[in-house]
Image (cartoon, rainbow, N blue to C red):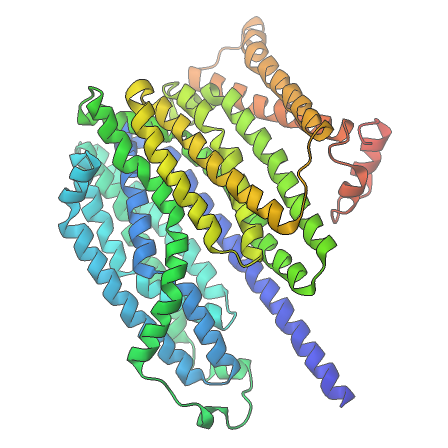
Length: 558
């Protein structure tokens, strides 16, 4: 009996470590693929210009929304159903779940492909940007590949095998970016119009989806049917006792689980898509022609890749936060629940505030460094503050998800989308793309603050006020002073030394030096004013030793 207990404990430990390893692999792959997908926007604008950049950024959120609708939360649901069958040892049933899910998703993908391909001109008309039609038609072909790939990913995740999903994600993004740039270079050289160049850029998603599907099929063909059976030994007799349900009933059950998840996941794409359907049209109504409106929309999108990079940090934090919150709640450990919530929200404020303010102050040199032109810098400065509220929304929503409150964050994002629509209608005719940026800040602020208030109420955590806020303001002020010293002093210093740089080189020098100076000033201020304490630093693994000794030696740590 003792040996059996030890074996059971060992199996649980191995399963737990396997799950953690799988989550880590999937998390790294997700961050890497997001990084590739985000950063490719910068060379896209550099090669093709803001007109093509505007078309691409109008179409891509539409594709993401349709993709979410076509897959309808199936990867998560397939993994759940497959996991249940695998634990019971019914591996044949697990494969049948995959087949039924693949059939349903193939049908939905075909339906949405038809909608996008033959409805491209109609959708472009709704956007008020006829030039988006070829790009919409081009990206529609991805819907023939992605749904089945999603089902296969869910199947392997159900067996806690994250490697196929991780590899396919990275391969998908790599092929997408490589194909996009090859077609961009060819189409620019052949002097195609902005609409066809943008269509070439969006076709990268088709190549990426096809490559990702081939990777998943390769894993499927490579695996032997008995491999999953070796992972977990079923109790004797389970296979005989189970009465298999019909494929139609199984499909209905899959949809019943998937549709609510889908409704939750489409909230963010809807918020992003609002700009595609309102900003170009409103710019045209204010007197611009279509090409000018799409050029303006391209300028508006200069700040988004940088904001998305900040959001990626919050997403990485939230991946670990959801299970830790859920575990503390399940154990009834109120202290752990509150401390984890308090720490995560505090870190979000510290990181988000510094990122937003730093990007706002350095908007012009960063804009020139990345996008070759100072046009749209003021818009980027305004849009920078969405970095704070979007990260706050991500982390607070993760706390709520750990509590099982899945619907609330989606409702807050839908409320934010309504604010964004109203804000665009009111402000774009007055201020152009600056008005769209201001509306974005208001929308994300609403979603983030609603999610924060709900998370604090659910966990019983009281927000830090008074001296904590004053200290954060002082740290931010010192950071701004350091950044402004660089932006005003570095060009003068280089001029005095008679070191001449081209405009883009000078902007890069100012931007990078400004980021370094601001980060150093902010970090030292946080330590010196006691916003971050020695005890908190000591709790971080592998940070002890020399770094802490140096901080104490120079009296930088309280």
